[in-house]
Length: 114
Length: 111
Image (cartoon, rainbow over all chains, first blue to last red; front, top):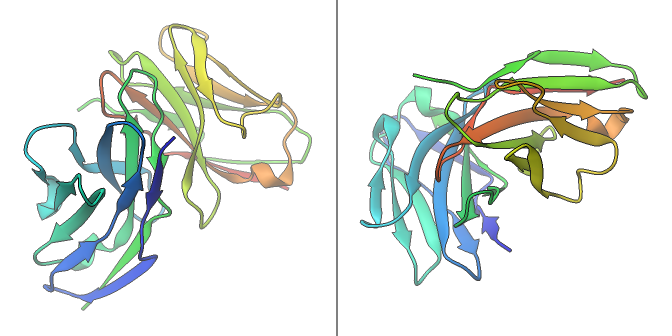
């Protein structure tokens, strides 16, 4: 079984400042890792994913994340945030295998302040 | 770009009534999922479906829930007798390989 911990439930940050949203996971097997974003009153949109290969992955809207196997982390970063980045961000993991469901963290609400 | 679609976007129902939530997965995807998100909480897995049968379900997915793929395009979630605690956003997702793509959700309110 897997579990995901997002350490920060809310992160306020000023516009154009950098941000890091933290995600740690626990799993007895190898996993795929994902970040999804949920804008107000909308569904879940894939931001980026780590499947294999380079541990630094780049996603949409200037976000990137780094997979650290030894620390079982997959932190999300952006060097300069915009007001439009205000949203809920969910880290998720899944095991390998066709039907494996996603296990989500509780989410981090990013609020960008002008 | 292909998308997962869901209908209705909102549904209000009385406790004890049956509801059917509908999803149209991306056309070449073979794996289908339902998740729910109670207001202010995390997204929780309900059920996965592959090759016309349930492949995995969570403890939330009890006898009140059922899923069906009635034709080649639709994927439905039925709640037989709704309870107040079924009020949530329900998301459908589909995938071809590793990555699940989500629909916009159906917000269900049980009164």
